[in-house]
Length: 270
Ligand SMILES: Nc1ncnc2c1ncn2[C@@H]1O[C@H](COP(=O)(O)OP(=O)(O)OP(=O)(O)O)[C@@H](O)[C@H]1O
Ligand SMILES: [Mg+2]
Picture 1 (cartoon, protein in one colour):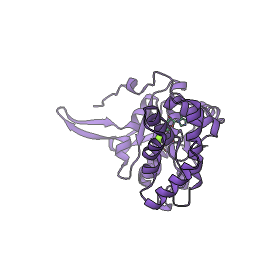
Picture 2 (cartoon, rainbow, N blue to C red):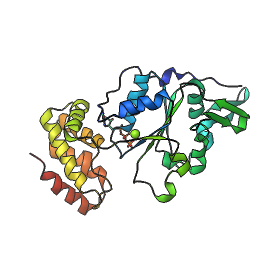
Picture 3 (cartoon, rainbow, N blue to C red):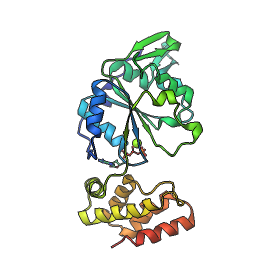
Picture 4 (tube, protein in one colour):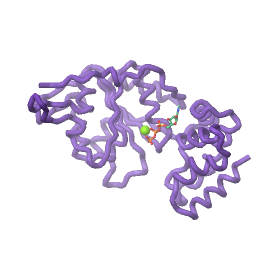
């Protein structure tokens, strides 16, 4: 017996706001036209997830998102037999649902998954476009509208956690980074509901924090963090308190680094 899921829950009804920063929409649409798998590369909080949500909406496809983690097994993606009142019933995993019914499957933070898990996507992401379900003895040809998208934070992973060469080379890649100041300010204004002056200040703060990258900070403040700070500030918290709570405290536990970051940020405050 096969349970047939309803993909309606995965449809995106309203347009997710996405501010393009380059030719990423055109590249994704060209990849989609050939159902080529796409890899979104870039630091945390720079718009990868928002972009794939926007593209799924734009292309009118349901979006099934899976957050990869180190205990993830191939069965978590493909599916498994479960015992219930009717006996043993097969349940499609999220990847199998997307393959059967024609969704975009977004595997977030793919490097977290073990390499033996990532190889299940190999026959899906080359000319074969099939998903073998060994436990069911079934070979599923991908639905014409199936597409695989993965995200990848270059630089955060160790060599052991990097993607296999044979996995990487199956994908089209789109590079993401924190947008140019005026675009980032526009995003913050819109997402945090703050006025232009505050958005510009937050972008300046981000620039200061990003200069400390590699000098004790793995990463500067992300666009996501700036939006959080903007929301706190527009909620009535003072700017310094908002920036401390949304940026300084989450980004590092090191007291000296926090102090250095505060000094750098204070130099940017109006
Ligand atoms: N170009 C953009 N257009 C609209 N919103 C954006 C854009 N870039 C970033 N954002 C905002 O920043 C937030 C964080 O972005 P998102 O969640 O997409 O980051 P991510 O790259 O997926 O990060 P992670 O790697 O941590 O998952 C979004 O919720 C959105 O509010
Ligand atoms: Mg994300």
